[in-house]
Length: 270
Length: 342
Image (tube, rainbow over all chains, first blue to last red):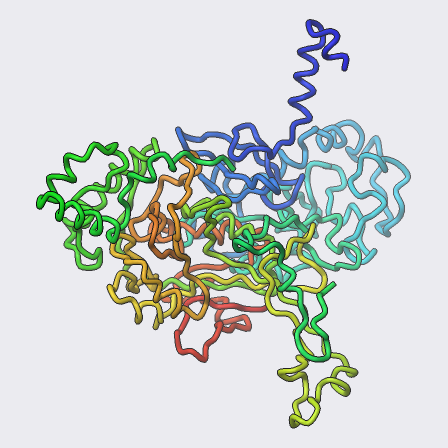
């Protein structure tokens, strides 16, 4: 309302509001649009033109998920050293760095520098899981850690004095970009399967020796909630893409939901 | 989805051999010089398929030179039609490669991203009028077989004995596959999902029945189609036991801005009215070493693709380590598309 009354002063503000509140996924392939690769909210990517007429990703107009990679290696870095030989040792292997995504508000850096340096806040000696007394608003899933059936806690995975790093079994730090080194500590079987190219996904070139982008654990799994309550599944539910059009002349798909046979009486499902 | 304006030129467009021959015949009757008549036709040049294109040979039988010419003709025409540089690739099958595909039905969550990725990559017709999708995802109800079922309904009345359901009361899975499921979130608790696409059979029934041999199997295992030579008889659609083939009943609707300009002659180049199309394992990508669009997009990594002849490929590892089956193996089509479970 006020927009109409004070057009000169508030027009700009209203325009801004309009732009902000307009849904992101309104039109397809608009540059500056943001969509997600695998985990909504934790694997964001901006649509950009990488060469004339070619975008880095095409996004779904309904779910905001990435549907198509123009360049599967855009924004990637080398995977880095791995302990055991696999495809990534003989081929060019890259990963999308997780650090910019996880530390986008520079919180981890600040925590590490300001307080959790091992002196100002002492390193806790007890490793038994317990309810946090502070930072419930800043630590993700602080009251709802669903990992390890209640047997592990923060510092089993996060480094004691470097909050921007993860930790291995010997106290050495692991980069957030290589979470597989951490997750493999317990999930050895899955880790081996991932190394073989069976678990998880890789994109890029299928052929032997071809460049591949490997997807690391936390791109698809939420490490703080891998159990997901009674679903007991590591992968969060997604909104599906729209169903195909119904054949012309068909109003609904009720025929698909019929139970057949004399005992069912042709009852619709649900 | 923006409506495209190709309808303006639709009426003037000669796009299938059948249409062409029909109208060429009319012209011949009228003027006894079909060719001259056609060349002097005042149609917009961009909508015209050239004389050479209509009378080119079956792609399979062309010499390399003829193939090159056919490709150049198409590149020129598509570039003009879609207003951006379009490449048409003609890469032959790769030496020492037999493509294989594996899909983990235990992992699939039914999100249909593969379906839409395929459409974005392969230039299918889209929109309300004619929507073509090469992949279908069926939602299957998880089987419930309780002791009560076994005792009460497992035995048909007076029809002999059969434990575990029968034709009249299947006690296990009770619903047919659903195409049109649309829940807010997938996967649903009581369902699993079963994607189907072209299985690239070793003995493809579609190839057997094609009267003009425009669909054939290349040595790397991909069953391809030369759209120009397709007469639209749809015999292959009837023969395919996997519901893999789609027909362009009308003029395909492919908006210029959504068109993928990297194409292959036998794969995702724009199709015309009256021809059959299907999954080609993204031939324009895979023959260049790149993974298919559906493999890349699968958010759960349920789709695996590689060279069956390479013992170290991930597809061979799947075949060696997982529980694998092929759909309708009883038909002896020898699909190169495998389903597996962990």
